[in-house]
Amino acid sequence: MKKILLFEKDQMTLENVSSFLRKMGFKVYQCINSNEVLRTVASITPDIVISSFDPEWQECDPCKILKVIPETCLTPIVYIISKASQAQQGMLTGADDILQKPFSGKQLLAIVNKNIANNNSFVPVYANEWSQGYKHNI
Image (tube, rainbow, N blue to C red; front, side, top):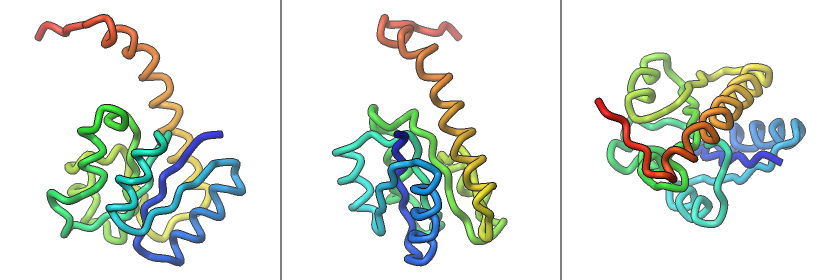
């Protein structure tokens, strides 16, 4: 069962998205603040992180922090944004994908499945080379 860490400040969105993803067969870990995100990641390694985006976070963005932790640096991160103007900033902070409100269950499922599949195909190919000290000459 694939694990999803869902970080959403809006309680209604948190419940709706969690319920939908559970019905689709995912194990969902809910977080409502950045400290919970970091505590949860310490105990599980999610297959994907879905997070609300807040342009005020700047250096305290939990998803930005996850990109520098070895266990989660390759984990796909999808930001949920409320304004189209937040898309560029979200991508610049390390998001792998963006989902703008309002969105359908089909859109959510497509983005989740695409990012998990992309990550699963990437990691086995390069993990072995990295573990053997592969160095890319530029």
